[in-house]
Amino acid sequence: MKREESSILEGAESRFYQGNQIGILLCHGFNGTPQSMQFIGERLSQLGYTVSIPRLSGHGTHYRDMEKVHYENWKQDLQEEYDRLKETCLEVYVVGQSMGGALTLQLAASNSSISGIALINAAVTDVAYQTLRTEKGPMLIEEGEPDIHKPGVYEITYSKVPLHAVHELLDLMDETKEKVAKVESPVLLITSAVDHVVPPSNSDFIYENLRSKEVKRVTLPHSYHVASMDYDATMIVDNIHQYIEDLSREPSLS
Image (cartoon, rainbow, N blue to C red; front, side, top):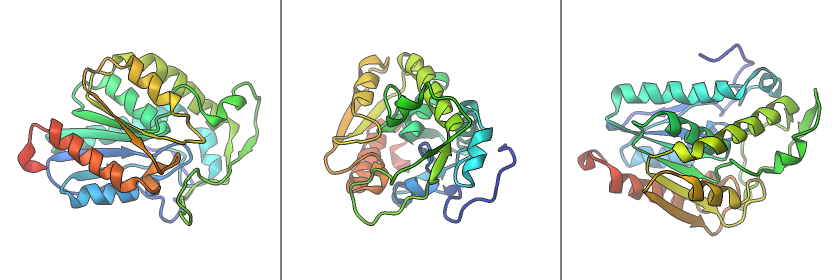
């Protein structure tokens, strides 16, 4: 259950699409909201899947709410939604973008029942915030425009974030690096060729350290960091759908 927060920004709400008994849990990134994963979620829903896109604690309300959260809250948010999907779905796949990718790896490391995961520009080793690791707070960090190649795309984000929240992100990444080797679930590793926030080297680290024997890599040629809203968003959907069809024990449901 989320702690008390400010009102949710219009468009930043969690999303849920009822479908068949194959569930897909989508996780947005740091300073993002479910809106950033909406296109992918809607397209996967149209393909018949049950799709959930939860809003992580402190996100999509007011930036001051991020001063109150610990990365364990984000892990709990994803775990609770995964547990809810497991109650009604025979299989559950988890897709995370950026910090959502780190949270997805954490979830997979502790839940062997996950049918498979997909990581989109997952952040685990090096991010643009790295230079703030030794800064002391309290202070607010000004945020630039979202890293999206496609012009005219609007992502709901805060214009500034608390340094505390940045440190929580970096601590989560540090912990996740140690968990990658525990992930045995099949993995679809999706990486933008050019990413100004999370360098592609993050995906290389994940690939080299996974325990999983089933790993497929996909490179997005025309997208930057927020790939779910960029030129290759349809390519992401197609690859996730094919990935699930290849793995699913319930082909008649997909």
